[in-house]
Image (cartoon, rainbow, N blue to C red; front, side, top):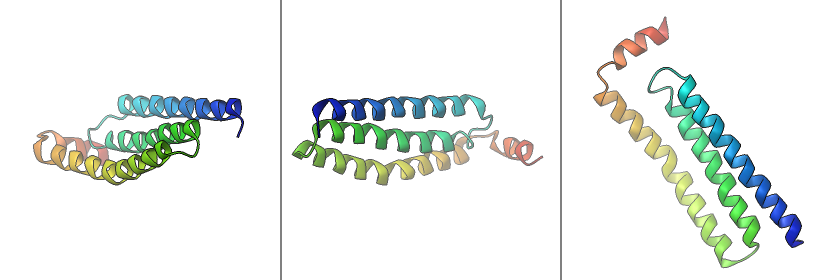
Length: 107
């Protein structure tokens, strides 16, 4: 692939990752309850990580660095949902206002 085209694709992927993270941050501020905020944080980070590492893979081309980025992607995709779940459990255990938030959310 031509270097200029590869660079443009990589820049487009990086820009997409920035847009995804911007929407995830917006979701953090728009949602009212603590456990509801876990969704945009977890989903936005997962997609942004994919786009960032794909941008690196495209930029490096077929090389050992791309393989390393693929391994990092697999590791992060396996651990990101787990860490989001554990943070949600911690909020459930430690947040004293969670019961009132749940009642307000249901009504």
